[in-house]
Image (cartoon, rainbow, N blue to C red):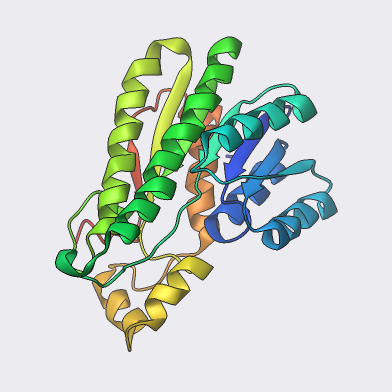
Length: 254
């Protein structure tokens, strides 16, 4: 089944690389106009260039998702350029203090991870929802994590932030279910992205060890997560809201 979003406008935070870039490209290939938000201007420029080479329409808005005024401006820029907002993929996130035990983690670690990974999703949703309510419809997908659905001894702060995203997603889904707005989350496992490469380099044989824990026996690609995001954003998922969809090669089910 080919998924089409012709005439739709999609917003992607963290769209400069990794899962965000793959999702932005998938939206564009499906016919949507795409707003790419990120702090990485060079990376975002690469995403925009790729979309435009394929004949798509895209706009870059430099955005710190931890700042409400910038989230509000991001949505306003989408409306000014494209006139509406149909889909939002709140994907911006950071990873730090991975591998540290709770007593080793700092208040700075906690504050930064919560500000971007959880508060950032809240702020983006707040302003996306205002516009979607005016339109009477919309679809939101948030990036959580497989570690947002299960405990891990490898870290504390990052998984806690992603558990928060899952809870925020489910509650918002209930609040707006009768408003024509669907809210879901994707929960990636180990995916080959610039962010996870840094984590993986901290531990010898990390990839080999983790592959043994994944039933499918490999690390996932950003495009595989983007496929799930595209489906959740489309009419094909019209009766789906409030879920946290695992894209983890079976890791949590083992």
